[in-house]
Image (cartoon, rainbow over all chains, first blue to last red; front, side):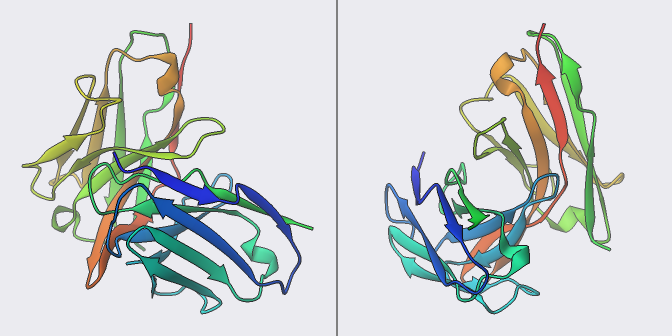
Amino acid sequence: DIQMTQSPSSLSASVGDRLTITCRTSQSISSYLNWYQEKPGKAPKLLIYGASRLQSGVPSRFSGGGSGTDFTLTISSLQPEDFATYSCQQSYSFPWTFGHGTKVEIK
Amino acid sequence: EVQLVESGGGLVQPGGSLRLSCTASGFTFSNYAMHWVRQAPGKGLEHISSILGNGGTTSYAESVKGRFTISRDNSKNTLYLQMGSLRPEDTAVYHCARVFIATGGRAFDIWGQGTKVTVSS
């Protein structure tokens, strides 16, 4: 299985902050990297697919980058509704493994 | 509205069985591969099984291979996960998810809210 290393595991930030989360894979996955937002009791939400492609309906303050083994998720200006857990996922080979998540908390 | 709703979770003893269901609405179910993903308490998401739209090809993670069986009934717009020989480490919230394929990528674009499975004596 492809291993996913996500960092940091948690962070504290304020509304308006710019933040970046990183995800590293154990082997090259081209651009088959996705980002999800998770909130307790809710279905996970797809934010970014194909490393940098914004899913329909997702605000443009979210962006993704990278290819190969190193990827980033950036939120340009954090909003109150963005406090959540963010997870990366590779869809290059089965099983489509996930990172352990980054919890974004209010500072 | 495009929607997935899971059911069938509950408390089961170690070694027991359980069948989860995922009912789809708002889209042509048979056109999409479907997957099961679980999240154990305090852990990350784990992709465990997949099935193509026509039900012809299935895949399983090593952690569930030989114990779980994925299936679907396209006439009922329903996905299933038959779980057997359950272990305490199978305790998790189980989500079904739809695969979205586009130029440049593939991902889970629609998820259910999940059904909780607890394996304990």
